[in-house]
Length: 350
Image (cartoon, rainbow, N blue to C red; front, side, top):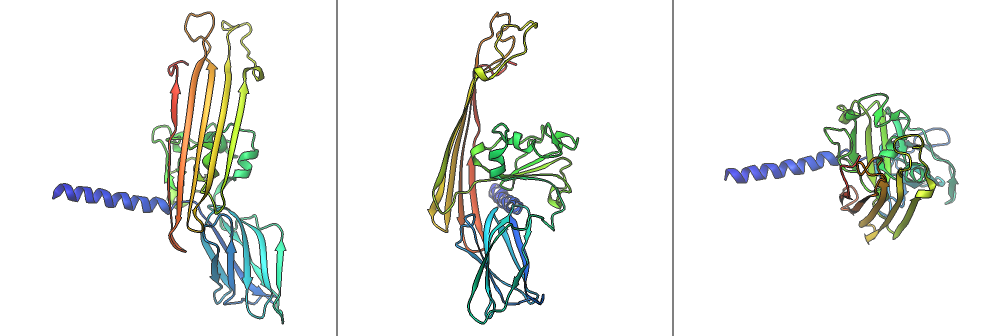
């Protein structure tokens, strides 16, 4: 009986921990007020939003007595916002950007209309988060794809202003906190991620370097939150291959004891593939990816006392799989798994 109670306690503790972690999953908010041309609030206006980032076809809210509306738990992406009210022109705003961990404020003014009329507005969405107190950088998948950096998570967060060699504004690197889809993923000894998620699986990286929220009060350095891809209502995928040959490199061994030896990579092949889509449209999505990094490189002076150094082979492979289930209009369940494996001819060579 005692053993059963212990197992029951551990099970409840595990479930409770899962729910506590789920509260920290980075999501965005969209808020604002709806008024008439004289600035008076319009209660009862219908506000509907759509986005390829949403599993649901749309989300709907009704303005309060003060004309206020609010959407929470939104994934990053571009949204269409539609505002309707009897006796007023229907207004549609396209391209409203919502970022995970941020709040987008969109105030709307509706005009009187004796007939049913719809006005669609295309233009830049608000870019200033009026409610955010932290300092840092959000790396979107578009920005990540355009940056001239290695295809590594560490290269992304080290590119943020205030970050240098894993440190935030000179703090100890062991003071950083890393979260992947809201789950703490920090090595307590080094302060690095326990395991780097595959590059193809990264959708967005939020790097906060100061003014952390209360739930990250223990972080004296940076808080790095990684959001992985989820798929969508349409099938999509990518295949990538990057090559680094020996001819694109040089060495500076002339005049040293290592003159004549090879330095750096003989060659490196970075390949990646991904596929995402619906298991059931508007209900269940999947996303999977696989990264393979094949390297052949040289270490100066290895093997020891040999005139010519020998090549070292190293393979790094990173599979990733994620399922997202929209249980109902207010609840979503995500499950993901990933692994990072190595094979190395001479692990101790350095």
